[in-house]
Image (cartoon, rainbow, N blue to C red):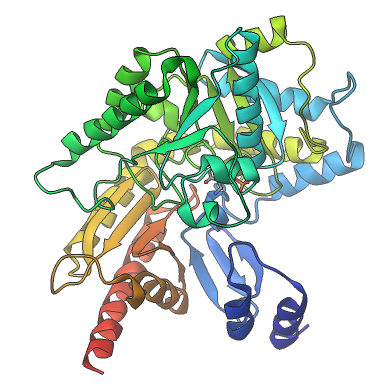
Length: 456
Ligand code: PMP
């Protein structure tokens, strides 16, 4: 089929996620046809460096035959069976064991889901059930953060702190509230405050919220180690230690959403390990299978698991595809490859520091107000070279830069005027050079076009 035929059929029949349907209909879609390594190809013959690893998930890169073979073998052996009604199957059991071996020592159980959103729905029900079983049914409030992303199901978007999502589709799930995010640049680099003081202030906002709600009513605090969709927001160094101090003073569960940061993104198996957190629960997905097949889950710490098991009775929750055998077999193979190839160590000791060094050079660009990275996640804050401040929103500098990136052969995502990357973990030093060089060219071109607009 030709590009135009695909485009027309797409326009006529396909409603895309997170998309203005009308605008896309007018513009038409890019048709991605195949991919290898860190590159995707489209139907018009373009080869594009995918610095987003799909949607932060293709950690081992495209075209890994071992994953194809794992799926094929499992499809032959047992394409589907569920884990309801006292059944299980080898891929789910093996994956559960492998995950718990890689997770922090106090996490020894996993509940499988089909996605990160479902993982967060599961987490919410589990947390509230835990407190009910503990004889504290009033502990229902979950404190999350503004501009967090925890998924697109009703519970996922309620936990998330994205105001435009809350504004659509009716009321959010009750007893979820949000506190200030540790986003120094995005919160306007508050005058007179260095990032570290700001980080501690954000932790203080959490404590104030706990006190306002009453500890006896608060079930959990949920956060991403590094906010992904919000803009690759790396909190100030002071933030997590200060949050840990706050949580130590209250009997509240800590949920660390590892959907993006898990599986090597920050140079450890989990973001929680990088920041030395001891979560009670960790929602996971994405990098678990390198995105080859949909699978997620919740890793459950001993404290919660013991109560659910010992005092529980039936937990009325689960999905047809919880622990799907083919997805589980692929995820298991993915974890085995990551271990065999030392992918996590490579991010921590080699390509992560190399990206940090190269990425930091972009801070010299007059359009860049801040360049930050950690492991293989990074962001650039676009600013007006004339003022060093953000551009007026309606100018759409970020969207323009994103479109220019694509024309130059680079997928770099924009969140407002924040440009973000999260490349496959198999990226090489030479490919990082290429990425940074393309990003630099895109910044130059964005600056040129914005200046031309101003003159027009
Ligand atoms: N949590 C986080 C931190 C995420 O980034 C995402 C997806 N971007 C989700 C949850 C939801 O995952 P999914 O899209 O698989 O439902």
